[in-house]
Amino acid sequence: MEADARRFYAQAARRAGNAAIRQLLGDLAAEESKHETNAGALGDEFLSAAVLHKERDMQRRLFVLQFVQPGLAGLMDGSVSTLAPLFAAAFATHNTWNTFLVGLAAAIGAGISMAFAEALSDDGALTGRGSPLLRGLVMGVMTTLGGLGHTLPYLIPNFQVATTLAIAVVIVELLTIAWVRKRYMDAPFGLAVLQVIVGGLLVFALGILIGSA
Image (cartoon, rainbow, N blue to C red; front, side, top):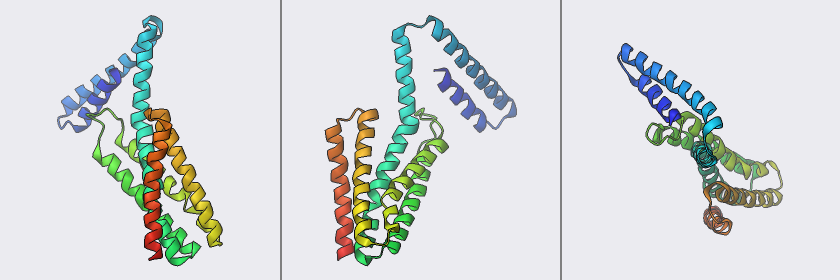
């Protein structure tokens, strides 16, 4: 609660046009920061195990909202959305270097797009999801990494070897997404695997179909 109040006062201070009001809100944010520190010290001494468990659950939820959720969304987008352009280029050209360039452009472009989308869609003031810049950075980096994972094999000159390795990387990426969903989103692992594999296969097949046309 103290952390939410501190964020509220700090954000209100940044938006205040009057210097006196801005100073007042800044002082309130500083006081809430002190309260947060004092509450932590007192909590260790006086709070019951049940209350401490609830506090830990709230901290875990905040971690999921600020890091896991944008990171997972980015990894899913990067791992799945870039499959179509990558494999379309691969099967249209059978040229590993050109395919790598297409995949690189798709991964970086998707990363930048998703970073801006996450940062601009929610400033965290109402949802309590934390810094939009941090969430945008997490999502952008994970989106780019998701796209680069199956793009890097096309640095190998042999088309058959590169494509086989890229498909293997895609499988690892999809299983990783399913594991993260099970670990942090409480999704059944079997269902999570089925969902991500179906989505990945659809985009993968679309890329091959377009590239082979």
